[in-house]
Length: 482
Image 1 (cartoon, rainbow, N blue to C red):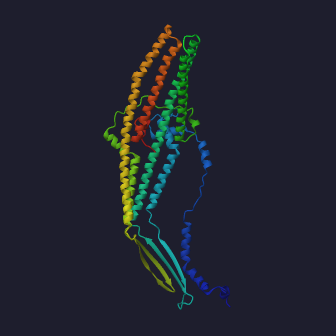
Image 2 (cartoon, rainbow, N blue to C red):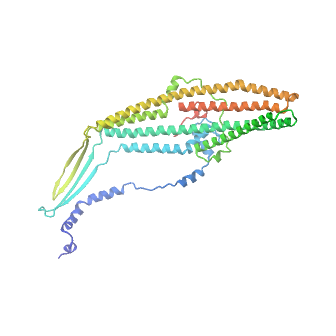
């Protein structure tokens, strides 16, 4: 027995025949597979821990120097003073640190990547086959075959796939715009609440002190028999009301700080001692009315309406895709066969047939969904237009109420307070009645601040309906980096 026979002793005959054949015929294929695997991108795990995220958030601080630099890039003409956190500074901080905005930006990047990938045609399929004929009369008992399947990426299916990916990018950008605007509105509401609450705290603090002195004076009158116990209880109730107003104002300021801190993703403690600014906050702009052209242009630029328009475009693409699926999908399949010494080159032409109803049910469903998307778009536009009209009316009503209070009630309260001062100096008025007149002036001031809050809230609602700022340093923004 030779050396070769000794090596193959006990091995089936077809294996011994297959070994040299495998080495000759499959070596290029194996080499191609190895080279292809070496060029593949490898998976790298990146686990995250919620506890680490929580710890990182607790360590966040507001870098005012960095915020001021970002503010100057956004609005070169704005003040961007680190010592005064106005709307421009807070807007810049929000863009830098808000996690929802960061997530929306990442979603845009993800959609862009998916859109680029959508242009890549589906990969071909390769099938390898082999066959061994143990009693074949041919010189070689082996059959080796390779067949491919290449889908033709043309026509409607390709256009629908690419179009859907591009619409997803536009939708992601509109969602980013809406996320930024929503965060901006939260920031503006929080800032307004803080600044109005600070004024309410100052006025209510003076009112508490005044009502306290008034209560002491009334106690002296009751003890001297010059006033009744009922009058003292009324003064006590006024003092308690002043204390409640002061506590409510403190709570509103703290709530505003928390809302603002959440918007710029820093602990509330880091904002507790900051100086906030809103120039001319006590003089909200008059609205009067919004012109028809201005109203229409604002509505056509609303990101939520544009997103509804994209939903309609997607429904249109879905219908186009279902129409395309009523036709057969074509694949071509070149191949190679080595059959016991004979080389064959087969070529296959495949058709993926549509359903038996020629996809009519799916087309009808897609048509209905397109009609639904159109109806939703019209409803969204009508709701947005109604919101603008309602916000204009509310803003005008709130401004008129504020103006009336300043024109009528405040001057009367000022005159009564001044008259009480003169009578007290002349000795014709005691401290308790003087305190009542002065308390009326402070109470009217608190009523003015309540009216100012309603005017600011109505103005912010109008901005929200128009999806654009109407005043303030945000109008100086030249390039909104999102």
